[in-house]
Picture 1: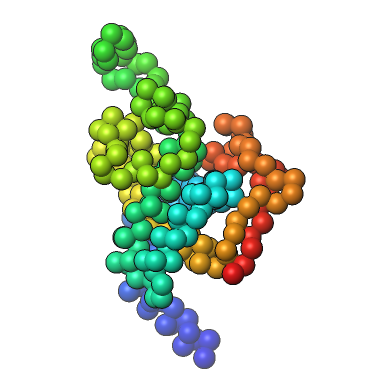
Picture 2 (picture 1 turned 120 degrees about the horizontal axis):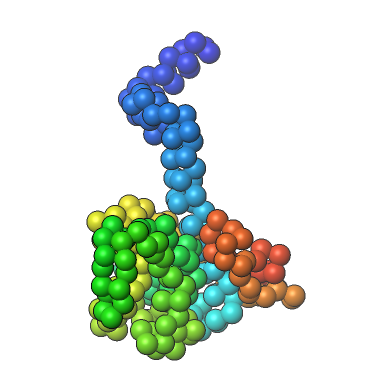
Amino acid sequence: MAEKQKNEDEADSNKFPSLINLMIENGLADNVIRDNTSLFFVAGHETTSSNLSWIGAILATNPEVQEKARNEVLSKIPDKLTYGALRELTYLEGLIKETLRVYPSAPTIGNRFVPKDTTIGDIFVPAGTSVQIDLLSMGHDPNIWKDPDVIRPERWSPENLTKEQRNSWMPFSVGPRVCIGMNFTILEQKIFLVYLLKRFKDIKLAPGGSVQSIPVGKSVTYRPEPDKLKIQFVPV
């Protein structure tokens, strides 16, 4: 029986090779395999986890946002959850994007070097300069976002969003090297939030709970302070 199972596992591995197997078969060094595996874990799970933590904090401290999100879920997904129904959850998607605006999982994009002398507006940037993009500040810039500290998922309706706002929102980077997991994580978070909002009729801060962030640089991602964020979930 064990031998049969082993043969079946090997057949499945050959039919559906894992990412690690593919890297081994292509001769990647052990340290490269390790680094890529760590990257997939951090980028694919840690960022989703941190954003859902922030959404929990937002729902607990913004009852009107919570009510609108729950009403949308209950009205558009009364029964079976389908991919088509998920696409109709525009307010919930706005909530996810708004959370990433205020609390980007990676608050900066850095370690980029200017290959040649460049002028941006009135600023001269010589070749070799190290450049960082401060996503946290961009998401709170009052010249770009009206009332930037207010959580407003409605901002993300096509009729409300400006070109400047679209271009300044880059939690997944932007352009040809945009993160390939962007659509996946938004879909993943939608599914989680659908079940959360349908299962619990109220989400609020527990006694002694507060919303505070871990200082930038003290964690892999920008996330709430876990010892401070205490949330109470009231079941239906």
